[in-house]
Amino acid sequence: MKNENLYNYILSIADNSLILGQRLGELTGHGPSLETDIACTNMSLDLFGQVRSYYQYAAKIAGDNRTEDDIAMLRKEREYVNVLLVEQPNTDFAYTMARQFLFDVYHLLFLQELQKSKDLTLSAIANKSIKEVSYHLRFSTDWIKRLGDGTEVSRQKMQDAIDGLWTYTDELFHQTEADIAMAQEGVGVDVTKLKEVYYNKVNAVLEESTLQIPESKWFQKGGKKGVHTEHLGYLLAELQYMQRAYPNMEW
Image 1 (cartoon, one colour):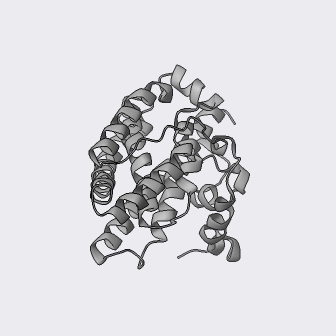
Image 2 (image 1 turned 60 degrees about the horizontal axis):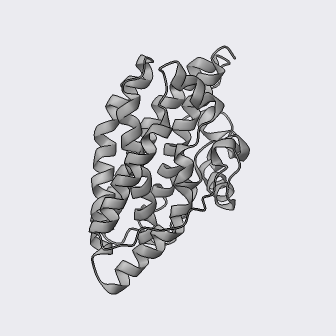
């Protein structure tokens, strides 16, 4: 493939939104309130909308007659390169919002830099997505504060969620070969430069929410290289069912 690094780089961005969008979609009809249920469903749709643009571009670069659906739905588990954070399950509403918040802070910082890309397609997708992701961050931040600075029970649940998910945050700033190559060409984002501002922003919200900042320096990684937790296989089984059960289906 002529532009293999660019293709792989696009997947590394898109897979995060695909998997997180699927996780949020699982809440449809199961949210703690109607308004929150609809909000989470809409955020899921936002992420899938962004994903379509990325995968359409990836299919064009691949040039081998694969479609956006093929790339999104018909890869094997080890071929997905999303970070481990986004595949973590909806253990409870605190975990769902903590996962969302920890990714949203990163996602907005990332898109703000990606809009400067020399690749006009990636820049355009980033520009279009920033407004949506800005809302996602406001929504998840509000829930961190509401639960963290709420009742004793809600604060403990949110603290447990932050403590449980913290181990997956450092992977956001790991670089693959494609990441490095695209950053050097001015196409991609050097995510290592986002790390300090990311943790500053996250820590500020946690402190305002009366939550403790985890002290653990032990982090898990592997998702960007296709090594995932057990949760991804179950998620993909549901995500891919229709495409695999009815090949070449058309609506």
